[in-house]
Image (tube, rainbow, N blue to C red; front, side, top):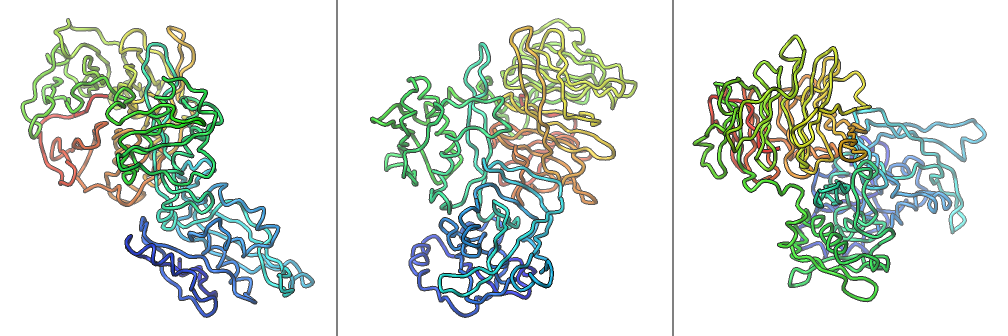
Length: 621
């Protein structure tokens, strides 16, 4: 625990860190924990130390108000089943009504408690108040969805009264308490882990099913309230439906009301790596095709949990098996199936020609100009984007004025620009283009007199303006579309800073009448006040280049919900101007630098220069 919180009070929770092989022995002996005597204060757990076990200790007889407050706060960080011991710090009424599952407030450090505050002389002996304060950095809602916040002041009141206990003695207890948990950041990272649950992108005429990651946080080990293990918690949240933020653009194949069979708290594959999931009677309404899609949602959701090792999912209804899906049959549900060579890379050489580095090239050698006008060099290009099926390319001219689109596999004739910016300065012209997983092309015109976000359906035709209601006075400097086509990462300049925002891509209508907007912009990685570059890296992760206020440039991973971790910081590299990552997270991370040219970072390696000349290296997308 934070030592500041313990000042003047006594520690009320015991924290034990053990190797996995000893966990059962520790649990078996916890019943012998002494109920009297001091429990020594210990430092807060290391972030992410999932093996630390914290056991709640009830309040001692005659405990002072400060001890009750400290004990309650510490007990919230424990693995207390049902939070039963935690509730003993509350009055009987408050203990029955307190809802710890209503959400979690995440503070930079464990909360401070200020007080006591007394109402008047008459009530001084029977009631008192303490105020919890701190710096809030995130909130997790009742759906387990995480949302980072710019550091804001947190303040909540705990009211205490004297209440008669079972033995007739008066004891201090808390009678006014906010629902949910209040945790310091290190305890939150110890107790919870991020996982992705999967839903299908909302159906679109002519499109195939595509899974979309919906990130949530679930409890490590066993959830105190539901008593479910991590895999079961994750499937339960999947069945409850998508998060409110993602709900307008995704669909679940599970019939409404489907739950896990009552009493099922553990999900684990058998010795054949088959995971059998027993569902409530509502699941029986699904047809064979819908059932396979349901199984795909479970399979992809549990794929992120390495401990599960699921080779096949079998769904069971009220009267027996409904369907099954093996891991090697799940390819049809992949979000990006367009490219047969997804590890190809493209860049602009020093003559302004678009070049391709073929799939499997060693050390990024042997680049060749792409076919067609983009590789011919008739117009010098400055930035490029290639469709995910690697059939079309889009490039912005070196002066950032014109956007050209053509085939990169056949010798098309030179084409006229499909978008032209009328900005007076190059830096106010067109952004680098980006293709979404549905084959549409996106670009931002940064012209101060009329900034626009534009989309070309299939990369051709008249560009359509995309509305961004939450943009305010900000200007889009750069954008990257996700492979699933339902999220967009925007680098937004406002005032003196450029920050990262993630928006939801909503489509309304169909055909020529379809209109698209980017809704509900959320700030990701709010600690980075100046973001230089961003790229999607996998289904639910981005790689971001930026710096904190007064800090130096850093390269780090950010989850799609905006959450970050200390393990997400990558080795440093100097003066990065652009970054590129693939949907396959095992492929090298690429970066443009001012001094070292194009560099790559392979898993487990350091940055290496691979091209001294050239810029705007990208993967398809």
